[in-house]
Image (cartoon, rainbow, N blue to C red; front, side, top):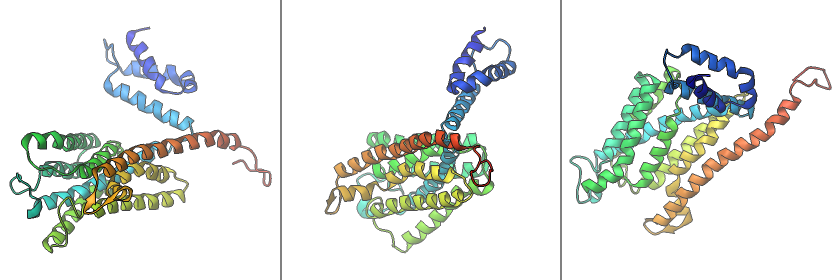
Length: 328
């Protein structure tokens, strides 16, 4: 056995045991035939493909095969949300409120956050016109720029958006990395169209002085409202898809609980410890930690419950109906 074959067999452990026994030799043989001469290590693409395939088979065996399609649907909704937020905050950066400019304004912008919002708007453009791998690269760059705002603002001594604005953007962006390789033109255009509508609406409201202080008064209601709207859209999709026995919407709704929870942190913090004139940092931190634990816990619990129910469903599948004799 060659080193390359041995390494492919190690990667094959990502698949369930029964699947490896029945098709493992065929899978490894196919990859060996496609490998170039003299290759000693599987290519990164082959390794990723084997791991993804193993994960899909394990989820299918556990009765939760709809999880990955649900995550991909949630990723599309997450990218629409990041584009809307980037459009809103990007326009607001161009219309700073004088009382909030701080000691070191960044030219015509109120903070260094304009760099991150511009990057997220470019992600929406990339999703509309570029292949999925380019979109994922753009998302990764936008994530790095968003995270880099914290040390960069401290080093340059310039203002930056608060953490309760940056944190949900990062969580939504991480979910966006799970975008499907192929999607309809309507879904690819949705983030760009949403961002353009957000830019136009925010510019209109700012021009009419209908928006309060930047990153302050509007944040306490705006971010939780976006989170509620995200869950509402997810719930509608879940109900609509469930009517055709499609579980993607239900899984997407469960996955979206975590980013929607981070968007609701200002409201949750106010409920935990309301203080006059704002929310205490301790309350915000407590709410963020609670969301970070509760969201994944609900997802894990849903997977465990679905896994426990799967064997029962499989046992009854194929048994004749006592009334008509038809098999289910």
